[in-house]
Image (cartoon, rainbow, N blue to C red; front, top):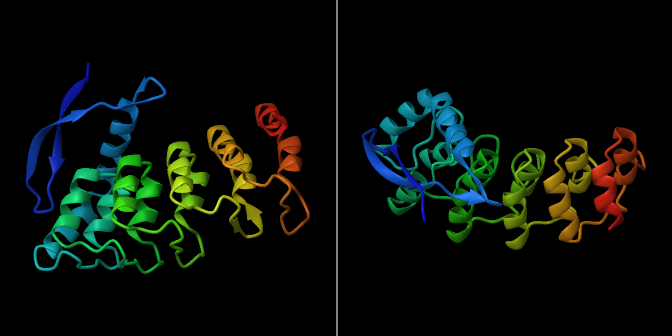
Length: 219
């Protein structure tokens, strides 16, 4: 049986509707915490949402002072339904903010798998890089979003990408994101890659005494 709860959904014009949202599960666990997290993110973005909604009434692709469009802001808030509505109204997923991030970067940062999937279905590229040369997979890895990491890999994300000489496998170990680490290993990430100082992921694991990571690496 599907468990639903009534929540308030913000439209691009600032009005609200009460809708029935299905409480989805991952690995058998109810994701109420995820829903609460998204509500918190909307609260944090209140001022930006209010500003961009007024601008978007004139131009759906209008930008704020940071170069962010409504599509980018709602992607960061993880609001899949609103993101879909904006795209249907002409919002462009190919645009980038002043720091080079596109909506797929922001959706990945939000932790909303459904928003990421929607943007991928709409043609967003896993190879998109921001001004710091970081792709969506980087943000999935460092933020510990294992489900998004897996999805981005399925859509062609580079599992052996590097940032500042460190592979994504190394970064997942440094941030102690075990599930992300396991996803990368299962996808074929190369554990022999070394950083600029000649260190491998196994050395990071040993230094941080990460027993569970070591066990995965030995499988």
